[in-house]
Figure 1 (cartoon, rainbow, N blue to C red):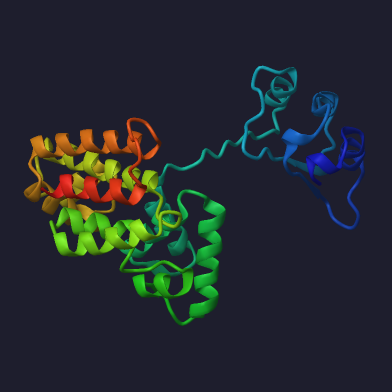
Figure 2 (cartoon, rainbow, N blue to C red):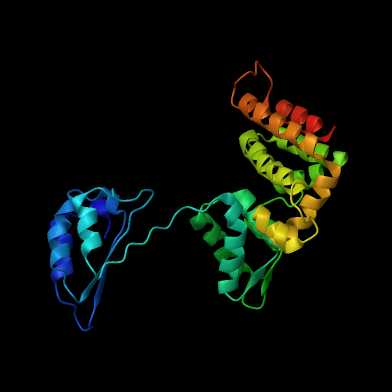
Length: 284
C-alpha cells in the first residue's frame, strides 16, 4: 500500500482482518507521510490485530515525534521504531565494501570510491549499480575492480574527480592539467561545486593528518581520518607535498572558489576558467 493511494479506514480494515492460510499477514504502508489523517491509527495501536505485522515506512522525512500518533506508537510494547539516517559521503565507501561482502564478493577500495564519486550517497542508485555489476560479471567473478566499474557503470577511469585528486596530491601537474581540460570542456558532467567539495573534504583530512601523533600507524590514521586503510598512503604523500601552512591556504582557496563558482565575487569567469585558476594555485 502507498500513502497517496489509500486511506486510513481501508488500512485499518486490512490490518484487522485475519490471515488466509498462514499464521501471520504482512502489510507494508509505503510513503506514509502522504497518508491523510494517519493519526486515526491511534485507536488501532491500542488494540492491534496480533496476527498482523504492520510496517509503516516514511520516505525522505520522519514522523513528528511530538504527535499523539507517535506517542501512541511508542507506548505499544510490540512496536519497533527504526530510523535509517542518510549516510554521509565519507561513510559510503565503507558501506559499499560491507554490502558487497554481504553478497559474497569483494570490491577494490578505489572502485568503491569511484562509485561514491559518481553516484554520491544515494543508496538506491549505488545498490542498482552493484546489482548491474553482479549481473554483468556473473557468479564466477568474486572481486569487483576499477576496470569493472569503469567499463560497466559509465565512469571514465582516467577523467574523474578521484583521479584529479590523485594528480594534485602527487603534484603531477601534467596529469592534473589534462583532467582539468576535460572537466572545463564538460561543465555539466563535472560541476565545479562537486569538485570543490571533494577537494575540501580531502585537504581538511590532510590538515588533520599533519597533527596526528603517529603518522605511520596505518590503522590509527585510518580511524582518525575515518577512511579505508588502503588510502592512508595518499594522505602520507599529500602531507609530504603540502606542508601544514600550505594546506590552510588551500582550504581558504577552496572556500573562495566555491563562492565564485556560485556567482559570488565572480564577474564573468566560466567554471572551467575558475577550475584552472584553482588547481594552479593549489599546486604552486
